[in-house]
Image 1 (cartoon, protein in one colour):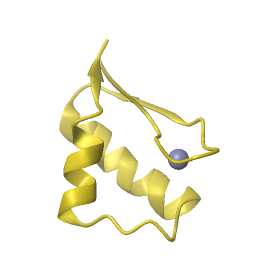
Image 2 (cartoon, rainbow, N blue to C red; image 1 turned 45 degrees about the vertical axis):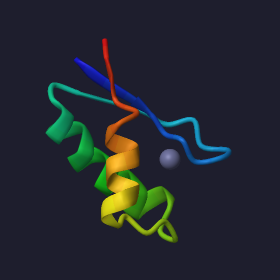
Image 3 (tube, rainbow, N blue to C red; image 1 turned 135 degrees about the vertical axis):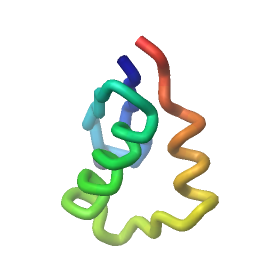
Image 4 (cartoon, protein in one colour; image 1 turned 60 degrees about the horizontal axis):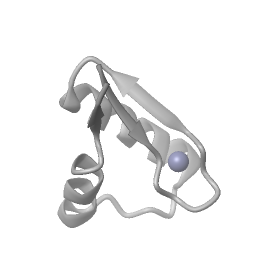
Length: 55
Ligand SMILES: [Zn+2]
């Protein structure tokens, strides 16, 4: 499993999925719902991807 703790201040969401790509899909949905102001540009996406842990 892959796990990502949302890095946004004050957000304690944890996203778990079978693969990095599946995590990133859920990140997109989570960001749209919880962080609509967050701009998911390439740099941000890569930064988020680098924080994914294998569990
Ligand atoms: Zn969040």
